[in-house]
Image (cartoon, rainbow, N blue to C red; front, side, top):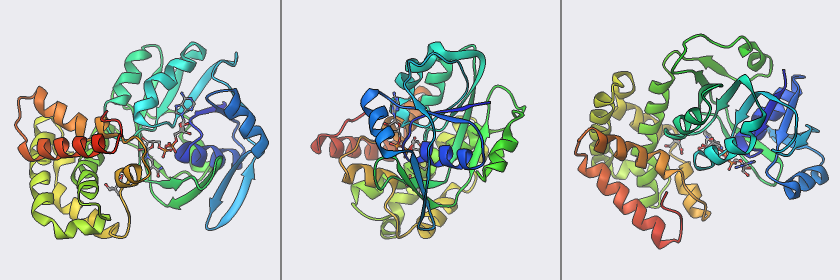
Length: 303
Ligand code: NAD
Ligand code: KPL
């Protein structure tokens, strides 16, 4: 069955090239005729792995193409997910499966509510990729992908295709715990790296700030029915800070490059959940406030 991939950015290109390399049928969905023409000029997607480039002439089409979609990888940013799905919704076959590859929480439910006839699988990824140029992707770091369906614990039959494509993955019967855990890590690390303008390792100089955020996030996860995601959160945050000390967090990179952040689906989602539960998390809320002011001062969207 064809893999349609919407979002030919870093992760979408990483998945598309590995699936195509393994002989799976893949089609890219590009936003508009200008992007399609630019892609045709480029001649395909280039995957750069261990410094070695390889180009794959993966067919591409527009959202308005007529063919039905049975399996879709949605690989855009969380804030684009709803409109991106709307652009192809009429092409989705009944029972089609969507893999939602967005960081944070909130966008997955927005999409799933749009599509009552289709199965939405949520994906949590720790793989790393970036685009040195249009239609080129560098595989920056080995990681892992967890896939799951909060409404149905049965894995899909096609998981072996990911195996054959060399995409490290595991079926998770508790994908929400995975997504909450990553969201908590991102909330404890990313905003502080922006506010202190530092690499992840720079947070070792602010241990009290990190610790109090972890305490509040642990309280939130427990109240939201996510005890597994709360387990030893502070220790893991310290481990990640240490292991990724030389890196700039994704949010720091977005702000430095003047790009929109996914704040609404990370810290915004956490603060809204706390509010829904009537939980006061003063430090988390203060960090959110400072971050919003920081973004506003740089002319960046606050949602
Ligand atoms: P990206 O910005 O590199 O790619 C997103 C692509 O989607 C862009 O090419 C954009 O043009 C395209 N797009 C958006 N709306 C579209 C539409 N309506 N039609 C067609 N194309 C559309 O983003 P990314 O880095 O691949 O990240 C995707 C998600 O994965 C994010 O939520 C991110 O936080 C998460 N993530 C990324 C990495 C990474 O290393 N890049 C790692 C883990 C998680
Ligand atoms: O996922 C990350 C990011 O930068 O977005 C880490 C490395 C965990 C930091 O929060």
